[in-house]
Image (cartoon, rainbow, N blue to C red):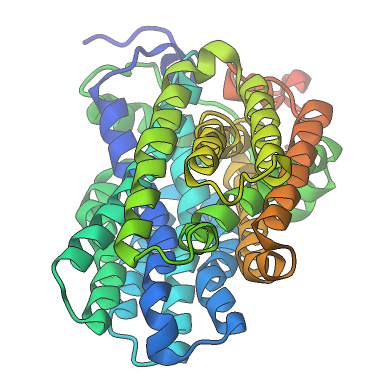
Length: 472
């Protein structure tokens, strides 16, 4: 196919969704399948670990939240490295860390080693956030970018469903309790191992290669081959941009976007992970005499009926509704749902009404901020600092998840289920306000327009090329 006069950026922005987009989404999405599975399954494993290892409340909190603290560090570290040395190099590294960490957890001899292995797993998971989001965003067209990046994140919904299915299967098999939790944790190594080869064969991000390394022609050739001719461009030279960390953090707009994206993600993850990982404990508070099998069945019902459809709705409707607007809607419904659970008489003692409202909160978490907080940071930062910015947002989000998961046993012990839900309602309301006050609407715009980059002009001395405050 003869090349037209489009630059690689125009070709990417205008390309219709094709098979190569789906292949990239599945390859990236398996990391989020692993994320959801591994971060949920520890809650089920703790049901067996607590009596076997005589764990204290503090130890339970650390095992549930330790990998989230590691994810905070992984997102910051690997996100920055991906801007410095390339997306592709880090993409394979973090998948390997996830596989090694999950497999090692299955052979942990005691609390200390399990905590260490969960840290390795979490570090890899943290790095997967900026890598998968940014790579998919930089492959995507402008019109359907939100749906494509949400498709990656939507694999988390399958992981949430798969966790209870595994738990139910192992419990029904009547295996020894020591074997059950080890198999639960070890199975988390399979998804990253399955896609490790595919990740290594994906080409470097074309936008990174063209705009940061100045290799526009190579980027055009890579994408033409990877897309089987769907992405054809001239590969005309574009002015490369590199941004130091000091320059990135010294830019007022970047700092404002960090505040909006990281703050909203922190608040979302506090409410989301605090509840998801603690779902078995929540069900235990609601129905103290429920068996582990019944608890896993209820968790499966919540995730399958409420969470998974929420991911699907987000994928299908995000670009139509608007990324910022959808985040606001989700936070608002979460606040109302958690508030009603806390304040409605008898709600925390009646199983069916509780599960109904809890399910509504899950649906609008996925059909809203759980997807949009992943998408928006991949859109609002410049190419040379995009994984850095997303890594900061994701890392701070995981810090919120760590706080929520670690504090949940203490908050629920002090204020009961009502107290935990009321606190989550207040956090959700803050997320709504932060989104409304700071974040822009990003749907339908090109990445370069959103980040105020003007790279489309050919190399030359045009002063209009200097707009981001980055030295030429």
